[in-house]
Amino acid sequence: MKRATILILTLALALGASTALAHGHGHGHGHHKGCRNTKAMGPRTAMDGPGGPIMRMLARLDLSDAQRDRIRTIMEQARPRFQEQREALMNVRQQLRDLNPASFDEAAVRRIAAGLATPMQEIAVLRQQVRSQVWAVLTPEQRGQAETLCETMQQRRDSMRGCMNGQGRQNGPATP
Picture 1 (cartoon, one colour):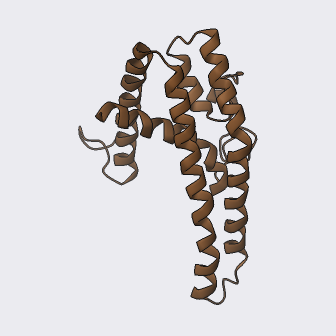
Picture 2 (tube, rainbow, N blue to C red; picture 1 turned 30 degrees about the vertical axis):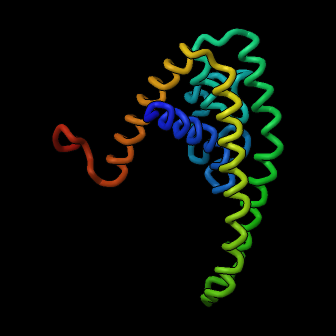
């Protein structure tokens, strides 16, 4: 059960990368703001797009052509719904940015910020729906491999979070 939970969380995070645009972390064209060399991110393939990272992870599972096509279809069908919710989030965030910074109006901030809840909730539901549909396409062996990959990815994320939170390296002082 723990492995399934980790897999679901990892797939959510991978698919959640698509919502990074809603948070202003990307340009919407596959380029990360501040990334000088987009080729360093690796070649773009037909498996990229909505859920690009998840598709790259799934590519490591030796999917059959039928599985790959089905998963691609699932992602493509979900794309417009995700885009609609991302746009709703971006609109609310823009409204927050448009508030006058010279004066703080808590009631206005709360009224506008309340608009974040629905699109975020819809995105969470859509992510779970897509994860469930993708999981159903995998064989039991592929599910086991996916769980292992997800655990590895989770360990890397946890390690990176520790570094980002000022914990530094666990094996000694950081070198310049």
